[in-house]
Image 1 (spheres, rainbow, N blue to C red):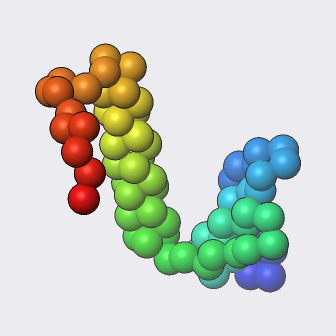
Image 2 (cartoon, rainbow, N blue to C red):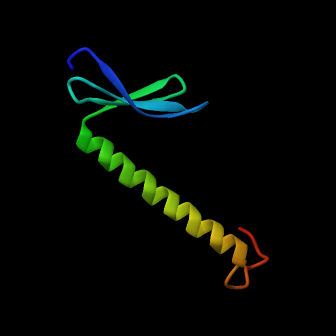
Amino acid sequence: MAGTEEVLARSEGLGSVTVCGCGTISLHVGGVTLRLEPTAFIQLDTMVQDAIETLRTRALELEEGPSQVLSLMTH
């Protein structure tokens, strides 16, 4: 499989994920390509999932409104 590249996933208008014969995983987004070892790719997935969870939590907090009265004073 050396010298070949397999598409693992593709998102129209965003990019793709490929793996080459040596096992390097490439994340292609727009004009940027990240080449990662499989372990680093898994760590990237974990980091992105953590970021998504943080954004969801923040969105829910914004929907609920502030939990305390905010000061009208600024510095």
